[in-house]
Amino acid sequence: MALGDVPIIWVLGGPGCGKGTQCEKLVQKYAFTHLSTGDLLRAELASGSERSQNIAAIMEKGGLVPNDIVLELLKEAVLKNAASSPGVLIDGFPRERDQGVAFEAAVAAPSVVLYFEASEATLLERIRARSLTSNRIDDNDATVALRLKTFLENNQKVLDQYPDKLKRINAERPVEEIFAEVTGIIDPLVAKS
Image 1 (cartoon, rainbow, N blue to C red):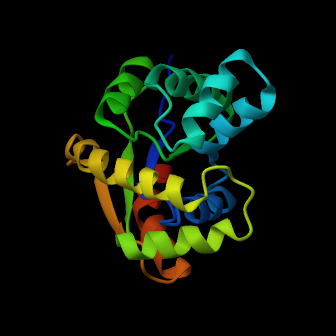
Image 2 (cartoon, rainbow, N blue to C red; image 1 turned 90 degrees about the vertical axis):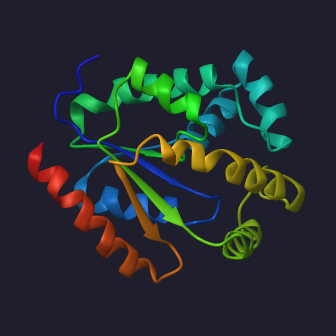
């Protein structure tokens, strides 16, 4: 697959760090395609496909869906959207080292890795607030605790793979302040493509 100069931007951070909010703002500003692995998985669940039953059981327990399923869904979405988009945001992926390696082999290397950093206390507070209005099966206390534990165990291994592409962003600031920093990172990528 040839993506040409289309930037591929991985957007990482713990559950509740604000990845989705920042991605929405990036889509508005740059008309990027926003691919959230969580959204892709939830869409697959809603499709009623055979693989949706396995995904549901894993997500309800807060576990990670197997790499091959996530990569297959993601690759399909990137292929479908890359030709007509000025850039692709991949939200919440990779969640473990092997996912990043597999994505690079099957699709392409990321142009940049945005990592939204927030304390564990902040993440828990935001997820609890979100759970009051969301209908997500993975926004309950037991599942959130497991998701956060899984994230913390795997995250540093992912970040260590991309020292030259990694941009750490303090996610405990106002949304607009964070967005100003993010656009300072993205503007040069867009100018090149």
